[in-house]
Every structure is written in C-alpha cells, then in structure tokens.
Image (cartoon, rainbow, N blue to C red; front, side, top):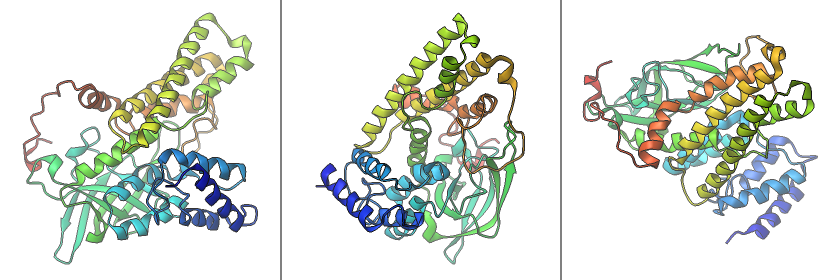
Length: 394
C-alpha cells in the first residue's frame, strides 16, 4: 500500500533523476507522470499509483519545495478538471493511454462543446446532430457556444444528438472531438470585459471516428453528468489559502487605505469575509469527501456560493474604492489563455464576476439541483420527459 513515506521516497527519486534546475520543463512533467506522481489516486500507468487522493498534497509539497515546475493547471482547467475524470471513468484502455498523459502535461489543451444557443440551461435539449455512417464514422453538424479556450484547444469533449426519436436525455452520445479537424470553425465572442475568452464553435460535416466515442451510444447524458459534477467542483471547490480569491484584494485595500473606510462598508466586509472563509473550509471538506469517490451534486451548492460571493465581494470592492473603482485598465480585444481574477483591477473583477452565475450551469438550474438531489424536495413538473426530442416545441 502506497503511503506518505513511500510517496516521499518516489518523489526524491524523481528529483534525483531529473533535477528541476537542469531538466527541460516538459521532460520533467512527462517523467513525473510516468512515475505515477501526476495524480496519485489514478491507476498505475495512467499518471498514478492507486494511492489515496489525499496523498497528492504530500507529493505537491515536496516538488514545490524543490522548485519543480507544475503543469500550469489554470491553462488547461477543462482538461484536468472535467475531461480527465470522465475519460478515466468511461474511456477505453486505448483512449486512456492516448489522452491522459498529454492532457496532464499540458501538451494538449481541452475545451467543452456542450452548451448551444438553444440549449444552455436546458442542456439535454441540444440539437447538434451526429449521424453514424456505414464506414464507422460519425458526421457532426451544429453550433456550440460559450466555449472557453476553444481558440487554444486541441481536443474537445462533445455531446451530440444521435437519436431524435427518443426523449431528449436518452438520445445523446458523448465524443472526443479533434479541434483541428476540417469543419471545426472557432469564432471569438467578445465579452463585457473587452476580452474574448469565450467562443462560439460551428461544426460542419465534422467526421469523428467511432473510436473517439466515450461510453455507449445513447448514454451520453449519464457520461456528461460525470463531467458536469466535476466541473462544478472545479469551479466552486478550488483549493485556496485564507483570503485567497476575490476576498483577498478587497481585504488588502481595506487595511492599506484607512481613508476609504466607513462603518457600513466595515460591516459588509466582515460579513463577506466570514462567508468566504466558510465557503473555503466547506470546499476543503468537499475535496476530502472526493477522496472516497466521485463528486456528487454537493458541488452545485459550492458553485452557487462561489458565484454569489464573487459578485457581492467585487461589488463591495468597487464601492470601497469610490471613483477609482470606476476605472478600467484595458479594453483591448484579447483572447486570453486563462481568467485572472486577482491579477487585474477592481473594474475587471466586477465585470467578469457577472459571468460566474452563468458559466458551469446557471444559478437557477443549480438551485433546482440542490433542491431535488441534495435536499430531496419534490421535482418541478416537467411535461417533456417522455416526449421524443423531435416532437418538442422549439
């Protein structure tokens, strides 16, 4: 059984064989994956050792102390937080061997082709079609929207309708789509921040071999639930130090700028500070629970709290700074590789946080998930559950 002592020994061996100061960054990351120290709870040969998930912190601490490079997880958050656990659970042996290593090292960035203009909150109502041809390929046509990192991605997790004659949840299949294939057209969507981190993606006669289907035909909705549950945990349950995230900049401003303080702002900041700390500790508990298995719907509650707190804290920061809070650093149209909440000014944080209650599942939909799947309340009446997708009003 792999324990902390064994992991420290293996980490020391990795560092001795590949000194971070003299080893190419990518070579070091590949060696770390091959040593089973990428994500220690994954199986051997797939970046792990079958160890307890909680022991990852032991490896990370040893490598950080040695100055070893990491895999820049923010740049490939969709791949690491969503695609990888889904491929691990549903992928074939060939798919796991092909995709997990370059995904973890960052050689291949991933994006998510789920939401559509007519199927955002009602994701199961999606209309992108995948038709199976006699040669074994699927031909995909449709449009996806709000696709983060599509302009940098090599691969995408994709759900498409493969059977319009059954109810909407039953006719979906999950695929791995090569973003460099003919027929994939990525177009920027400029946001309120001035940037275009999001994209819309048009799929025109894109041919996907059946070997890149993940899970069974028609079982895509169940496969997608693994992705979505991991997404909510990745967004709302990220590991943060005390005063990490949005509460950090406003707390520093409060301490460093006493002339901005008022009694009302003080009371509001205290309330939000406590709520942010409660959310941080709840996220830590959720991650400990994840060590025992797959994430459940509890991640929806964390994502809800994340969105609300970010919007309230950023609003307080703008108000605290007064006229300074109305300034904005740069409206230049850019297509960034990642979102940087704390590296920009208060105006950026205020505007960008508006998207937190939409991305990763709208707050309204997540409230339903919490009510029905966490609290066990009766579900809302739905008249479309047993109706074939082709017969639904659109």
